[in-house]
Image (cartoon, rainbow, N blue to C red):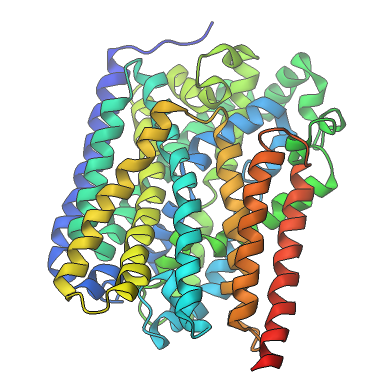
Length: 496
């Protein structure tokens, strides 16, 4: 029998969420004085140290997918789902911290870039590249942002038993306020606070869930009794379902590894965390790496939570309307009870709004800097700042309509689709360009067009009609982006 919420679950959820939102908006207002010009609003004072930068990076990396969606993956497929459910999470994010991060921070400073698309454009000395990058980022980030609200909505509804619309709307408004007022500086501090909520809640939930399931041995015994295939690291029975290739064969497994590596440095909300960092020393780099390594290990604990949910509840969650397997984390939290259930709800909101805040800041800043200012170069600094602030409200609210009208069935599918596009495109146009001197704007544009087209096609052929195998699609997108990038860069250099 599934657990049901009581008034204490609602009280603690509301209280802890209120504390999270209060702290977030408070640091936004405290940061107001450091965000009164457009450039300062976009990039802060570039004085953040390794601890705050590391915590903020973790918060944007651990989205609603990491704190809720991935649990639905392992709940559905057992251990074979762990490849898409975050077992590679540190393999992806640590190279971004140790290899790409310092170079990105220096490039932002050297090129005086205040947005990620602007940096991409400056690397290729092309406003067109910046504009195309901005458009692609905005489109894919809107898709990705839908998953953030869906995660928060699911956690709130399951744990409290009440409607989620008000909680989501209040959170969106609060997020828009602290971003509009505090800009980059306020958002960076808010992300660091939210990262702490995520880490504490998810680690506690994972350990307590594993204990409730009888430890690893008890968990595996329960899974085996339900279906021996739930213990398999790769499931041959899933090879007939192309969109489940990530759990089925070696191509899907390697594609998920590539996905985590590329999206870690391809996500603009991750990359933007280095804009405001002070000059990095070796000591800073070590400290930041340790902070991220510890706090970004959350998906490993969440995998245990998802597997424990399957061991404890069997296949019952598939019958829950709308939420279905995405209810795995919230149901375990509900079973353990308050105040942990309330802390978990706050953590999912923290994960959702932290990633969403990073994305909204990218979208609003980029649209203002890389499109509007290019088209209207004579706009005053105050006008640009006001436009960017208004856009933060717009981009904070727009995904809610999608969630209300047509929520995605399984959160991780939607999120990974957008991640494929951003990861494959900007791994080359941004990360590779840091090391390859032969880069040319023609290669960057060709890479972006191909990657965006493949992302759109994958949305239909992988997720809608399930004809393309998921892993094959990722590899085709990744390799095709690379071929376009290098070949057309060579052509561009020859024509120059």
